[in-house]
Length: 175
Length: 189
Image (cartoon, chains in turn red, yellow):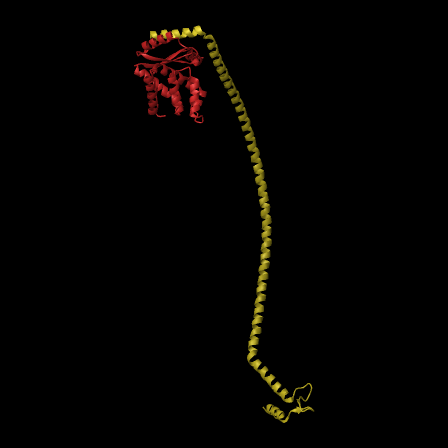
């Protein structure tokens, strides 16, 4: 899909969520859904398979998100998948999150952690990243067991890697 | 001339002979009438004379031409026979040449076959030596490759084992400690 079309979808979803007054929850849920979508081949295949009718793909989305996310999030994802744009879902969502961050004058900070962070940890991490980068951040936490332990934070072009995975890789490389 | 006159006179003297019924018949059952005999004789002499005078040269010429044609044909036959004899001699010679050529070709083929055999044996020996050399090289390479693969496999297993050991060692407290350490480090930078 072209960038302008992705941008158009992101803008549309953003406006709907903002009109519903649930932009913070929706962008957070959508961000986590996008990461799950990227990590799961089965989910990606199911939502992008043109042989599966659109209604069936939308039913899969509703089964996955129903009760676990707000109805706005579910309906937005369902709409994108139903329109045959499932392949571009992560790009659309990333644009939406970026737009939401910009609307609040925040820089998107993607944080990968092997285990879930408490809200206290997220607040302190947000403050620490703001201190380190000099900008207020919109923190998005992704649970990623592949990093084994620690945290990898990406703010714009800056990557702060404190993961065990990287240390182990460096150790292997040295060995 | 007097003979002709006498004959005419004799003819004039003889009258027609009649049988008992008054029918005119010949005087003799075999001989024609004298006058007919005279006319026939004179006519025959005349015809033969004319033939001799006018047709004789043509007949002589025809016979001469026929004789000449037969002579030419005999000459042609003699020539053809001579040519046939020459051709037969040539064929006999050629046959002799073919036999000689055949012998020569057989000899040449035998020589070539022998040369090929010798060359083939030499090439075979070279090929066998080359194959043996290549087999030796491949054995060495395979040994090296197996060694490399073994080392890579050991490295992969060691890597997985390291991950597993690290993952097992990363209990909840350690995970939290790592997170707190990251927050502190980033916050202090």
